[in-house]
Structures are given as C-alpha cells and as structure tokens.
Length: 517
Ligand code: NAD
Image (cartoon, rainbow, N blue to C red; front, side, top):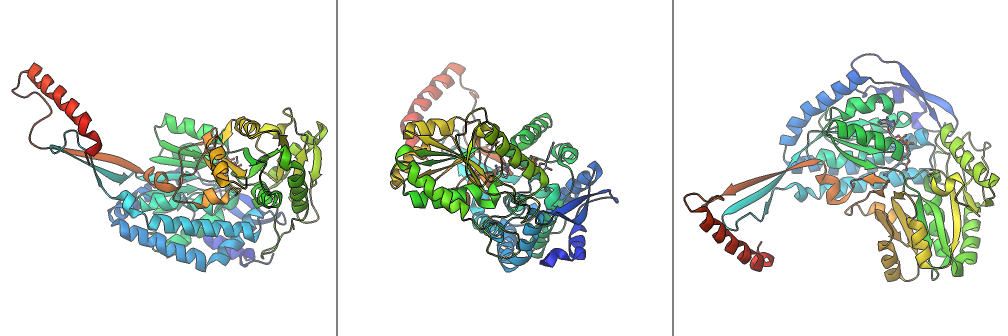
C-alpha cells in the first residue's frame, strides 16, 4: 500500500498512546481498500478506563485554572498543525476507512474550522451579568465552570471529525476528555491527540482508550460528568439509559434517513449534481447523507435523467491520491448490510436505475452507487437507515406531499431542498422536521456553518453540537446572586403589608420589564 503508514512501526508508535495499566489481549484491524490486516490493537478493560478518567481529571484541574485565552491558543495552533500535517492525517484516515482522499479532506477542513471557530469564541465562557430579582438590589452573575471529565464515544465513518470536533469545545471549556473511538479507527484518534499535544495540550488531558463499546461503555459513562455519543440510534438508546442510571449528562448524535426534495422549479442539472454528492459522499456512510429523494412530477424526468447519468459517471477507486470520486465501504458488515437492503428491495419489485452490484475487482468491500425506483413501504430500505450508497426515488405531485412524506420517519437529522426560488426553499425547509435543512446544498452548508447548532430531532438525537450549544453543554452554569439593601423577606414589617408592597412592586415591574437590562 502506497502510504507512509504501511510501515507497521509507525502505527505501533501511535498505539503507545493508548491508556492501559497492563498488557491486554488485542483485536485485529484491517485496511478496507485491500482487506489486509494492518495492526493488532489492545482491548482495554474497565481498569484502563478508570485510570484514563482519573488521569484526565487530575490534568483537568490545572488546565481549568489556566486563562481561557491560553486554552484557545492550543486550539489555534492545532488548526495550523492539522493543515500543515494533513497528508499524514489523510493517509491514515484513508487506510482505516477506505474512503477517498477528497472525503478525507472534508474532515481536515471540518476539524480546522471547528478549532478556529471555538478558539475565537472564548467570550461564550466569560461570566455574565443577568437581571437580578430586584433591579438595583439583587446582582446576579452566571459563571460557566467546566463539568470535569467528558467521555466521548465515536464511530468509524468520520474518524477525525467525530473524534475531535466534540473534544475541542470540551477542552476549551476547561475539561479533561476520555475518548473511546471506534475499534477500527483508533489510530486516527491517536494521531489527532498527538497533534493536539504538539500544539501545546498538556499530556494526560486527552486520554484515548481502545476496544469494544459494549465492554467499555458502562465503565466510562459511570465515571465521567458528561458523555457525548455519536453512533447508531440503537446503541444511543442504551447509552442514554446508562447515563440516566448514573445521572450523567448526555448528548446523543444518532442515525438518519435523510430526505432530499426537488421542487417543481429546480434546475434539474444543478439539483442532480447536488443530489449525487448528497447521496454518495463517503460512499453514503455519512449520517447526514441522503437516502430518500422526493421529486416533483414537473421536474421528475429531467432530474432522473441527469441524476442517473451523473451517478453512472462517478469514478470509483482505491488509492491514496486525489481522483476517485467514491471509495470503498468500510467493512464486510457494511457491505453485507448494503447488499441485503438492495437484494430485499429488488426481490420485492424495486427497479435498479443505476448501480446495484458489488465491485470485488476494485477491492473486497466496494459497492456501486445505486439508485432505486418503485420502492414500497414493505421494503427494508424504505424506512431503515442503509448507511451506504443506496437511495430511493419517489415522484410526488405537490410540495405538501413532499413535506408530508419527508416527515413520515422516526428520524429527523438532516434534509435538503432544491429550488430556483431560495425564499420558497427556506419556507419549505422550516416545515421539515430535521435538526438541519440545507437549501440548494446536500449537507455541507449546514454542517460547515459551525456557528449554528447541529443535531437531530426525533430518534436522531438529543442535544446539539456546534454553535454556542456545542460549547456550553460542557459547562456547569452557576448563578451567584448577591442581595444588597432590602432582604427578600418581611423582616420587621407585618406580613400583609409586605405582601401588598410586593404586589405593587410586581405590577410596576411588569410595566418596565422591557426596559430593564
Ligand atoms: P455504533 O452505534 O455501532 O458504534 C458507535 C460507537 O459506539 C463505537 O465507538 C462503538 O464501539 C460504540 N459502542 C457500540 N456498542 C456500545 C455500547 N453498548 N455502549 C457504548 N458504546 C458502544 O455505530 P456505527 O455503526 O459505528 O456508526 C454508524 C451509525 O452512526 C449510523 O447510524 C450513523 O447514522 C450514526 N452516525 C451519526 C452521526 C451524527 O452526528 N448524528 C455521525 C456519524 C454516524
């Protein structure tokens, strides 16, 4: 394999950074492009997780005491290092996931942008005056303290972004972090941690443990002060239940079955080009990628012609250089699920307009980008997330029908609307029950707007990442209220007089409420 990581000693050096208190049995990790075994990674235990949380907590105390500008400087330096050393990162992400270089580069872009965003928004952590109970007499100040230790559990599909982009605000807020990346993408998380330490992060503050989520979930969730989980809705429910048991604060970024709407006035070629990227970026293994397309009758034929043509033209390939437009699926389980969904749909009468086949000539887990028509509700993929390069096309008669069918899902993660009238598109977007909706873009506009919150409605999640919410969730808000002059009790006054006085006071307050600071 033509990558700097083909040398096993480089991967072994990264694994030295895994927190473990003893030698552990290992599990194998393979490169999806070829199916070759590239490393054996230690399976951490509860004792390792306990040590990781303890060390992160210890390092966190000193880190939290440092001025926020010093903490922000680390993120700012990390931004530069990620851009400078992107080739190492791109190679490793590709090695562990089988994605194209272009898809891997989106992660570099994302992580650098997230670091810049939070490094320049330290004001969110400043203590702030709020309106006190009695204007002039009660001073109320809100402080944002770090929660302590944040536990992050992340999936394999965006191994840099999803390991790091939640860690960055958690660290800026003054916390220690323990990261449990997916078993198959541990090395990418370790390299990101090394870059953060090169950028000035104190050693010990960001701990990485490796291994099976089912084994390490409870030990982690029971010890940390906030758990951030990104992964499937099924596992998210288990994580949420455990967090509830231990009263650990939790945010959950889960699955989707994302709709894309093509309105009657959309430019068919532009919408088709956007739909190709929306559907097949990262070989469809993207929580916010499109799996259902609702196309207005007036636009249907032209759109479908262009969409099928562009999809058939996509260049598939394995390789550590820019060029291929769609890469491999990440594992045999991923390929099996995609094949099962396509076979089930075809057996029940779906029509394949593009793709539909595996491509063992390119690599063991390649599957063609696939467009299906005539998909009906009894087919598994009509409602279940495929998480692969397979989409279903539906013709609709009106915007109302498109919105209704888009909302007919237990999921509510991301949506996309295509139209030549952006004001109309924005109006339609507000009626879609998804945490993010992109107008004339598939997913990147909303994801990359890091100043705005991102997350799922319905079964797609709890809480938000990005924006102010994505930082403040890693803090404990504390109100310090100081009373001056009159106390808030009757004191020596008769209680009835005190009550009448306050009644008058409340009436007066309502009149001036809008003018108070
Ligand atoms: P997954 O839920 O199987 O695994 C995700 C992580 O959870 C891994 O680190 C895994 O080891 C760990 N895990 C597994 N069982 C666990 C348990 N019982 N307790 C604690 N942790 C456990 O998900 P996956 O298949 O790796 O990822 C694909 C899914 O993730 C898709 O549904 C996709 O939509 C979703 N996803 C969501 C987002 C988002 O931001 N909303 C982003 C990426 C992926």
